[in-house]
Image (cartoon, rainbow, N blue to C red; front, top):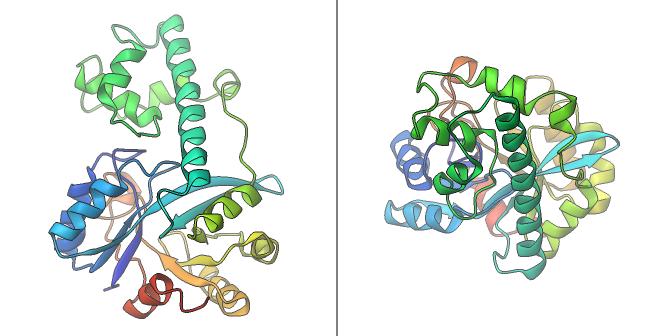
Length: 280
């Protein structure tokens, strides 16, 4: 059993558990420390921290950002940063606003084409929590809440007809550059982590030049080939170890192939090495 799970998602992005529910589940599974790392928002981290404190758990602030490097989309997790850093706050707001507008345009298109009926964009806003990174999952959950979608519907048809394809991609916001993301995290005093680096460890040397100082070494997507490569990169470049269950296992609301046991994370030593910045 790992000491800490440092990669989790809530209903503030693309999952359905509340921050407090995640804390409760983490406690029941035996974790001693947790980090909520919603996609491109930290709207739930303070609520999560309070829940963890109530349950006797340690917690770190977290966000999972997208960052593009050499044409590839990387996932970059920010951990243990200064929440009130002006640059960080501005960047989170920018990313949330851009993607919320993208989702709005896709919903409005779905309404025009008749794929979405008896439902408006305001219904999405009424259902989403303040500070959410509003995505397809919020739309589906709001439609089910308003009873215009069957609660057992997996939403695949809506995703295919409204959120996928060339027309939907035209609404995508500008792609964030990995260098800017990493520098924003580091300027806020956080640890910038390359998440689930499957087929991506070759980018570490350049990312380190930008300020990368962490890498996930224990994650459902870190397989037997990737793990030694990630550990080698961590040792070579003095990177903090991170990891967590993400969208897999009991702390995820996902079904299908993700509904399997998952105990990923970091050891007590790895957690305190990061928290206390023992690597500098």
